[in-house]
Length: 227
Image (tube, rainbow, N blue to C red; front, side, top):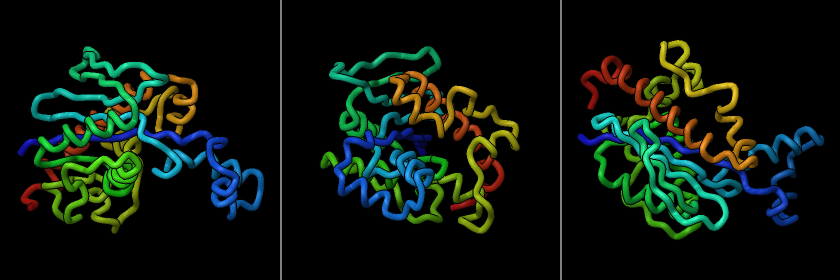
């Protein structure tokens, strides 16, 4: 089976780009200025108030990968190697989503960390915005790990035990963590605001490589004999 590990990074839209009605709706439960600011900081967690800015894909069999990275301004799409077995491909959000669905159709199995809970729903709604039709079902039967092995599901035994971050699993299992002082999931929004797309792409790459290493450990133990 041809498998691919994937992960996305997202960022929120500008608060000022939302209408007054939309702003009021999002802040209706905020009881203080602190709560209001917290809500504004969550825009990148919803596909209706955020967008996909990076998608990393990695083929464990070939050790080759792709980073689909949003470009800024009116730059033309580009494609170039990064020196680590990944090719960076840039374009608008619509273009990288289209490219993702074209690439993902070639694989029999997908591997993610919380892909069912976040990445796939986000990708689907953002694709809906542009009228892009998915090329395959990334949300098959939850318990069929051959089609979509979501490590969050597998490591929590489908919600029975506590959920941990990828960073925490990596630290406890001896896998190099993708998190650093300058790049982590909670810093992506600020990096995006500063125009540091290359740093986001690098972090996304490290995320997908860590996910692959974690999957290889899980595949040899927890998934032995699974269907």
